[in-house]
Length: 439
Image 1 (cartoon, rainbow, N blue to C red):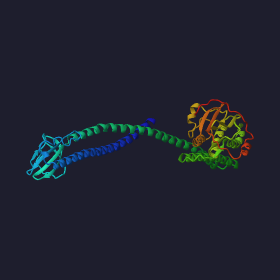
Image 2 (image 1 turned 90 degrees about the horizontal axis):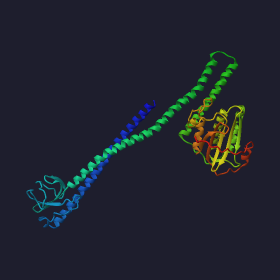
Image 3 (image 1 turned 30 degrees about the vertical axis):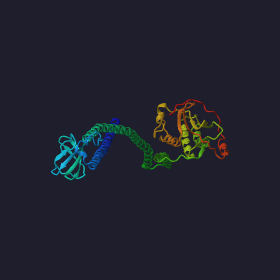
Image 4 (image 1 turned 60 degrees about the vertical axis):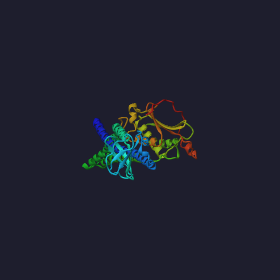
């Protein structure tokens, strides 16, 4: 399957590269054609200007063309081609006035309009004629140098074109493959996410359907109906939590909300969240402790409801995986410019090989039954959106150590009385300095 996907991605990339190369080919031909026209037009225009200047000089000095005075006139072309003169009589017979000038064909000459003619013994010439009393005065210059320039330019374009096109194709193919790889990865993750979501949603729906069918299959006492309805309610609540988590993540994926600018105290939120989970921890025989490392507010800029949900996910996971009689410790503290919140437990911990997938949706690091595997995905979305970073390792109590650090805010709340009142059961300790690997 992976090989088939790679072949499909390669085929798409090859088609995109072929289309890109075709577009570059068309653009190259158009650009080369425009460049050729500009260069050839400019050389022809320069020749016409030299011919017009030579004619003007010859007409102001009518005796000059009789000899060889024009043999070196106008030697300013690219190949130093001389300007040549001819005298054309009324019968259109041309007589060279410049030594070495080739013969001109008998023809009618347009007055003062340059023409290009290929002479039998001289190659292409640019010629211009002006009417005189007994015929025409014709001036011309060889275009052999311009033709050589044209041939060199066309040869260079012909050599460069395949190199450019090959480089374009290979470059487009490489970019296409690199661009297709993350797209294919996202597509694969989306398919996996859809399959996992379908599985997680199917389970409570199947239980609800089975309980309803069983309750309606035959008359039973009221206690039987109550037990069936209780199971239906339990699975409905689970289904609602999964749907709410999926909607929350979908909102974060589609449009990330602003993280907020008001500073919040991590210690206050940790105290409230710990108090909310204390009944759950007591019911499971787990000791839930809150620690505050320093006697100052632990401030970060983030929406308090986001931090509360993040802590709720971490505490809930720690309580779920800790054994009866275990201990879960929530710690708020400051390390230099960073504010930190930590949750430690003495459960089975998180295997190191599973940590890179810890925040994948519907992924659970252990086989122990629990939630749908969306809590840590939500927690990770909150951490990333508030510019925090994770530190995941082993707790000193033998379980998992989950830590989030943010840049500490320098602002302080206007009142501290509530802050101190909320920490009546806080134990002030120092955090052990154990080195833990990053996720």
